[in-house]
Image 1 (cartoon, rainbow, N blue to C red):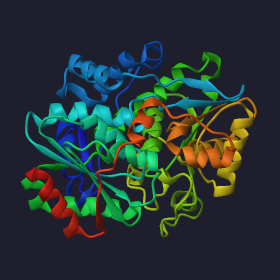
Image 2 (tube, helix red, strand yellow):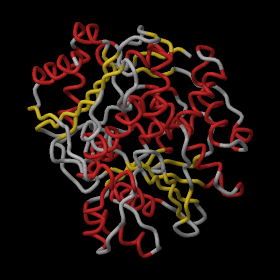
Image 3 (spheres, one colour):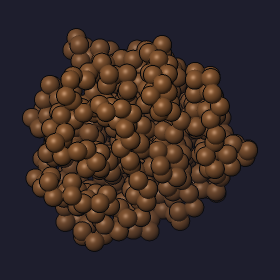
Length: 427
C-alpha cells in the first residue's frame, strides 16, 4: 500500500517507510488514498488475532507477508476486548485489559512490532507526547527493546498520579519528561523536533503518537472485534460513541466503516475542549486554550488526527452523516459515572463522556456501544470522590504506585528538549 503525505501529496511512502518516518514533509500525516475490499462476514466469524492479521495484511499489502503480519499481531494482541452489557441497549467495549490498562496498548504494542520490522537493527530514538495513556503504552511496549531509546513528554501536574507512575518508574531506555505546560505544548515540541531535520537524522528520531500509521491501523481492529460480539440481527443498528482527544480513535472507527464494517454512525464525544463539535456546527476551526478536565487524556484543543478525518470525507468513503460531534461538560461527566454505577457498571471519566454522548444520540431500536478506554483504577482518586466508594488497585498499579518517579522536568522550550534527547542518546 502506498501512503500519501496529506500536506505534500507528492511525497509517497510505503507502510514501513511511514512507520520509520512517523511524519512527512511539513509535518504532514501519512494516509492511504484508497482502501481494500474486505469480506466482512468472513472476518466477523474469525477470532481476534486471525481477523486482525487479515485486516492489517490487507492494509499493508505485500510489503510484509501474511505470516509476518500474523506473528506481529499474535505478539501484540495478547489480551481480550470484551463487549460488556450495561443494559439491553447500551454496551461498553472494554479496551483496558492490556498490560497498561488502556486502549493505547493495542496501538503501542503493534507499533513496537512494526518498528522492529522497519528499522532492521538500526538504532532509533522515539520522541512522543502523552495526555495520559499513550505514555505508559509506548513505554511498556518498547521497554528494554534493544536499539530503542524513548523520550516521553507529558504536561506536568495534568495527568493522574497513577497514569504517571505507570511510565515514569521504569527507567532503563525510557526517559520521561514533565513539561511545564499543557498537552498541546508538549505536542508542539514534538513537532518542532521533526522540523529539525539534522536532529532527526542524527538520532534517527521517530514518534509513537497516533500520528504513526502503525498505531492507527492497529486501532481499526477492535472496532471489528466489537461488531463480532454484537448479535447478528443488531449489526445494522450499531452506534459507537468514542471519547475523543487527539482523534486517532475516531479516525480508526471511521476507517473501519470505510472498509465496510456496518457501523450506523460514530459519535465523537469531547470534553470542554470542544474544537471539533464547534467546527462541526459552524464550519470554523477555532482551537481555544486547552482546559483541564476530569477526562484529562482528552484535554486536546488542536487534535492532530483531524486532517485524516477530512481526508476520508474528501475521498467519499464516509459522509458527514456518519459522524455526530458533541461536547460533554464536567457536570455531565460526573452524572454519567453515577448513572453507570446505578446500572452496576464501574467506569471512569473518559468512558463517561462517551456514555453521555451516546445516550443523547441513541434512537429506539439502536444498539449502542461506548468505548471504555482506561481501567477505572487509573483514576482512583476521581472515581472514589465522585462515586463515594473505594476501588481496589489492580496488581500492576499497586506495584508501580509505591515506586519513585524518575521523570525530568523542563519548561516548554525546544532547546531544553533537545538537550534531553542528546543526553538520552549518550546513555
